[in-house]
Length: 455
Image (cartoon, rainbow, N blue to C red; front, side, top):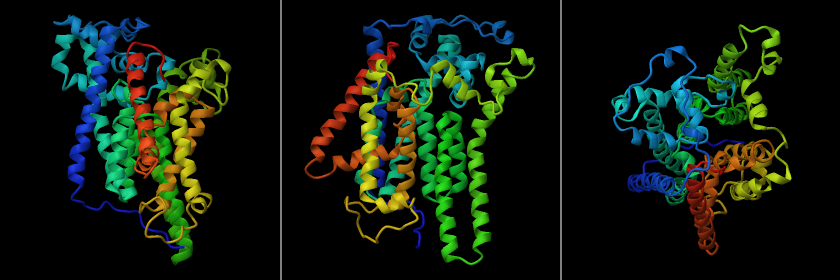
């Protein structure tokens, strides 16, 4: 079998007009979300008002130097009250560091970036609206800008993989109005994760593996599932090893080189997450007697993140399978259904590629049966990645989180874009998909911004 090389980006005169159009959609979608947040916050009273409570940091260095009084405290207070759910943790970490065990569930990239912005670009605003409000503002600005770049990178990635500008543009516009949009414009890590994941995948498809490793490592600084991006590196290495045994001399030497390179890159992707776990271990477990140690500190493999997820949030295999959680399964059912359909669609179209993990090349075709010109082997790692994420979201996680957990998978948007462009059924499915996105955008901005449970 002769494996095709990774496709390279091909200059196209339509890329620039599409890029400008997508940029308008991305910016418009963020302005829409922020407008809805302001409207719902002004019309309704939040369910939980405790987010505005902000005790002093436990650190004596922070508490002994109280910030100066703000010139416009009402503006600052409005920004602070808009920080809800996980945004409270991210902002607290940015302000005070990791004070409590459960805060280690929130990885450091977003707090570090927000803190840096608040002390540089937005530092003059501290005396105007207050430091915590500036931290919140920094988080909002950072995530909305990151989202715009994520949309642009998704389009460039989609063009390289699908080799169809129209399908790529439609998929990227869908991402701009995805059902988890509220999280991409709030103080959550979704935008940074999507930005670095899409960017890393784009560099991966262009063969820039060192850049890929760097971008993927940053994605694992934003969210724990960023380490799964190492799977793309490993998948490509598997294909290279297979090809080396069939078509190259000194196969063992070449194989060793490929495995070592892939292993080193994978380690680099894991290092940020592992380092953060070690940081938590040193802060919480050391300098304590055995009797005072937290239970996870005594484990053979002390994994802080797993303990936090299980102990504080009840995350675990089948632990969410309860009758009272049925509404949450219904809330997650649209994105789970869309993701499963995209996987099944690929498997039915290319069963030999899927079952052989890409080692069995598909028949040579100038065009696939769905009208596109993509290489199914190139798409396969996206299918495998999404399959693992769907299984994790359904069986292990709080299932309602699936809406935002799966929202950073390119395959979901590619499949939705493809069926929306299909003759006959495309118009009907297009209405359904856009109605789903619109409903979750309005519902999410209403509930989430007022501290009601959403996903």
